[in-house]
Amino acid sequence: MATALSASSTPPLLEVDNITVHRGGVPVVRNVSLSVQQGEFVGIVGPNGGGKSTLLQSILGLLACHQGTVRTMGHAPLSSPVRGRVAWVSQAAANLPSNVRLTVRELVRLGLSNHRTWFRPFNRDVQEVDGAIELVGLTEVADRDVSHLSGGQRQRAVIARALVTKAEVLLLDEPLVGMDRASRNSLLRLLDGFCHDENKTIVMVSHDLAAIRQSAHRIIYLEQTVRFDGPSSEFPSLEALAELRGIEDVHDGHHHDHGEAHCNHDHGPSSVTVGIQEAE
Image (cartoon, rainbow, N blue to C red; front, top):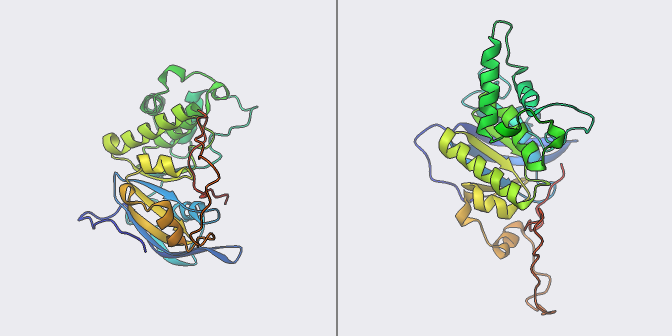
């Protein structure tokens, strides 16, 4: 059973009302309802094929809902009042082709391409681009080729490209993939700061449950429908999660000890995922 947050007196920034989304004629998201308040950091987790990326694309209006509605700031996705206020950083956003030659500043400026007018002063663009770069902590490498950046720095650069539009809502799809531990922690602190200091609203899909529990204010567990929605501190244990998903104990209580468990002391990007990766 899903656990809901206490109701807020302010209207939600994002409302998803009983949506069902089909892909290839098959329902991937079914009867999903949720709301997100301004300034929240919401993490979305779930198993392979559970519908996480599909949900994000439905919120953006890239996928049509078979039933139900999505409203952002009271408006339909892709409508004029919403344009530029919601930014999406896809899974592949930081994986730029090796033959692309762009500096960080040039990459971030591309974020203005859909919002620029012929009458807009160029120096205003420069100020906004430099401001977004400063916000993500990349001022010292602003003129460096993005191909020479670390994975964490590239991810920050594409987030700056989203922020330069003055977006109020950031939708992030697996931004932690391929990052080492230090870069992952640094990015999560940055995102948390956006919520607390800039009043940005973040909805982040990730298979990294450990990272989500340590950073998101709230977790939504999605497996076709919402199985849990509540504060990160109340996310169920692995045993409760298995019960929630209908996974039975195949050992019938007869567990066998095959020796001590071994901890992984590798300092790379591996982390606890408890089988919730998704490739949609």
